[in-house]
Figure 1 (tube, helix red, strand yellow):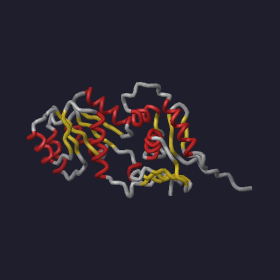
Figure 2 (cartoon, rainbow, N blue to C red):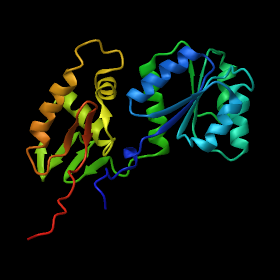
Figure 3 (cartoon, rainbow, N blue to C red):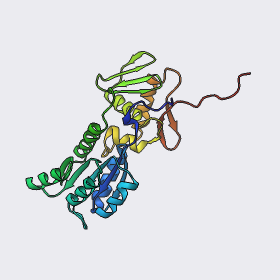
Length: 242
């Protein structure tokens, strides 16, 4: 068994955004990537049909008013083809009948414009949590265990007390174990995509976290020079024993 986090949320989830407004598509792309998702944006329903097969998203964010098919028709086409990938509608159409139409077509949620990006991210996380529920709420990596429900951290059999910010930082690294996360991604997820303070706060809190987590062997939190940080086991020493 490798050192990867033993839980489904360790996989980077893919989000396909179907939105013809370039500004909104760019905003969503930045927010999703900063939150640790892999994101692909397209402007038309026909392009989306192709990318569902090639990109294989875990969730679609779909605008209703697209230049070719509308989002409801796209959803019906996907459901008719047996695609069960969850779909969140993001639209300026606010009539109750539109919401009913969207959900009846096979949508999983319906968010109207203008929207708050943090609420949208919570909706996305909620859908993915329902579709890919954790096994027991515990993330495991090497001898490090993080129990999300009990809000407990244990390493080497010893309980570790973390501040709220240290907790969010560790949880982000745990759910992206063996992946190099940039300082920008960490900053966006832990402090918010609109954080305007000193970006060096990431390095400060990683240092705090290392003092508590990596006082055990082997060290797990690694600095990737010029890029960011990664939670991973150090490589094994493969030299022959003399």
